[in-house]
Length: 273
Image (cartoon, rainbow, N blue to C red; front, side, top):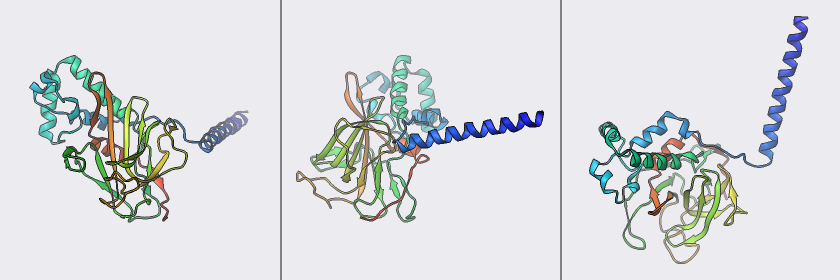
């Protein structure tokens, strides 16, 4: 009797497992599932919060304060100083900063450039170039991170959406070339610039899923003439913005976020065009 019971339990477990597997495959066949970021559940996400370290008087001034979030050194001395400031900071202001940081982390799921499954020479690199000087269209600070391609071929590297969201902007900009802007659930505007081309079907107002193909890396921009290429190396300019009450759209340094997403890369087969 016990042997029969064990047998039928094994059969039942196998049927349930098969049903779950088939349901998962069916869901995959009908498009991307809605993805949720795991970053907020990771201990390292908290260290990103602690990279925000400013003198105490900056808390009281409040001017341009939020633009420095995620912009500071990860040096251990800076982290210790942050922890001291954290204990003495105004509680409401600290909570505001914490909520902003959580919003910036909440929807991010995938690194914007998938790994190449079939080309070991195709990789990317990036540095913390936040607020480095740029001169096209006037002297300004760099509001983003440039993800550089090891193979300088426009249209080779696929670009995917970091998060679920809605296409808010798409088309040509003199500075950004062919760009696309995705607004996530928590209000973060992810900005992908200098694309060589867009994936078909992407229009303003379209919903996209995390990991969905947006287009391909290129070198478009720095011109009023649509379609201009060749003014700089092939790369992706990746930026993130958040609309803050009373301050408008504020840019944040995506460098540290990209570091967290390094462990969350999709794998793509790269194709020559």
